[in-house]
Amino acid sequence: MNFKYKTKPYAHQEEALKRSFDKKNYAYFMEMGCGKSKVLLDNISWLNENKKIDTAIIVAPKGVYMNWKNSEIPTHLHDDVDPNIYIWRAMANKKQKTELMEGVKNRDKFRILLVNIESFATTKAVKYLESFVHRSNFLLAIDESTTIKNPKAKRTKALMMFGQSALYKRILTGSPVTKSPLDLFSQCSFLSYSLLGFDNYWAFQGRYAIIKQQRMGAHTFQQVVGFKNLDELSDKLKNFSFRVTKKEALDLPPKIYTTRDVELTSTQQQHYKTMKESAVAFLEDGGLVSAPEVMTRLLRLQQLLCGYLVNDDGEIVEIANNRINTMMEVIEEMEGKIIIWSRFRHDIKKIKKELIKTYGSGSTVTYYGDTSQKDREDAIFRFQNDTTTRFFVGNPQVGGMGITLHAATNMIYYSNDFNLETRIQSEDRAHRMGQHKSVLYVDLIAPKTVDVHIVKTLLQKEKLAGKTLGEEVAEWLKI
Image (cartoon, rainbow, N blue to C red; front, side, top):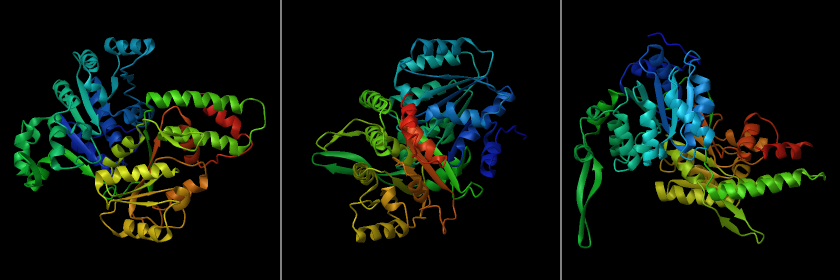
């Protein structure tokens, strides 16, 4: 087949498209950083060009779905498609509601609707979607399909029902099995029950899980203690999925950068509004403002974005936030070892606690100011050599220089400091001599906040310093 590409594909992306372009149901099980979004958009372009579909619905988590509009679609969707793009918002304002209704009525152009997966827990979103796709030939894609791995979840059931009217279906995830092979049932059944050969979860579990009856007091229950027939399951998956990891995708660039949005809670939004207004007034009062004073204002805003405030007594006040949950979602998409950088001691402790709770006591080592020299040496050795130690959580100012961590092929910036040298050096802990694979860098960013500008400035290799810093930050805060 000849495909029109807006951006040149890597060999593994081209192979994925060739295997899937005309299939009714297909799964892109491509590790984060391998470009599965591009493959889907190339597939949509082909289906549209060949008059197979007139509409595409892309479903993704809150931290991901806007990235399709802002980055993926403009970058990769062929210009010939020229779609009208609509965004579902549960709390839409008057203008946004008008746009959504226009999306239902105006069908003279190809339409793409972006929906956050959480919306499928409500009947409001489903009713709108039904009107949007009425009498259309549409493709339905779920990005990060592990979000429907629970067959009992309301959103899983809603997507299963809604998906029955889709002409084409796609699922995308970097790691389809996050806890057990049983995670595959709902994801694959969304495509079609026939693919795995089971129309209910319990029959699927009976075929691939080893069940043992357990007793706790007077109660007995069935517990999964192992798995069986996995070669058979693997063979079934090969018929309708494409799997690739960064290790296998040999033509990837040495460094891959991406971001993940972190939605602010209502409490964070209220505090951020107050703090940024105060900061703008401070920076624009006409007085001489020093760089350290500006940095302190940014520091306080960053702490808020990470989920806490420091009061006048120096005590930490926790605020409800989504940052650590977003980080855990990113981790589910990754294979192999991961370095996580945060500039704040408080966050490093929280991250370690969450990782240990999920992945076990031996999974995580830390490296920051409170870490003794002996423990630092032990942390490096364990991370580099122990297969059970998957996470290295550190402060980039402390651990960002002079150590080798090339066992990792993934790096998450939970929060950045303002020092360009620290960023460059911390990136190179994994990307250095001895590293023979691509390294993926993920920045967690709260949209429309200083997070955006800090990361943008650092990635452009610019310094956050100079005589105009106060004016620059004041402009940042006016968004």
